[in-house]
Image (cartoon, rainbow, N blue to C red; front, top):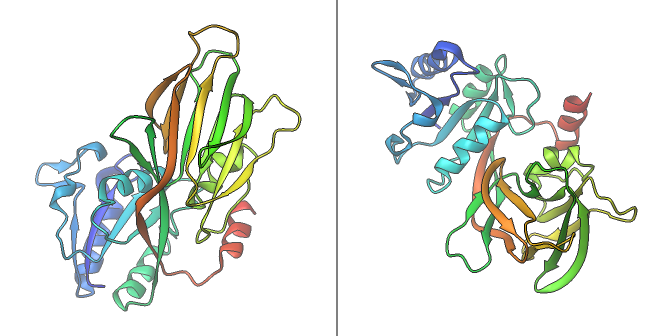
Length: 281
């Protein structure tokens, strides 16, 4: 790899100091790099980055910030098919393989093609009957609106009724997202390359409510059910943390495997289990 694009979160990288140092280092090593977070007028807001300026021959996108930053860049670049690698400038990051003190060594390895590229499955979610939806790398969550009221959600898999959850909601997580909200809610940690999904209830009020592992190709439908006998109950749907829809009683939200995957560069030779031991101490 010789051609890079750098995208940095200015809240984690004030004045884009790290980003500009990386661009200079890549040029020094004989490669080419563009810092999309930097313009002639100075740093731009993360939301204002012009992703359409990514050259077609880019071989890797370096994302500086944290897991949230990487997820947002994934959403904007998912159709480019360009591999990404994250540099963690925050606290605890599971998706970002690199740290500030390891990124230069990693660039050396990337430029020598001493790396592997992992494909991560993504989810697509949409209201049943709608033409448009949203994609997610980590998870799709159906959750209460903030009112202190329990939700009742019916879950169907491939058209067949599976379970009813009473609680704060339900998480449908990819293997990549299993170390996020899914983990906090008591769900299982899944090896990133696995072709399965985790269905995890949030604060379930049933003593026998358990999470369920499903095939990645299963089509999941979550139905909002009236619990108090009234029609004003509601729930929100969030894709990778961004609120995308509001459900009323009787609505169904469909979650299925997206048609495309995301490519993540990996230069570290340590196993997933070793990474987990270090991250979780």
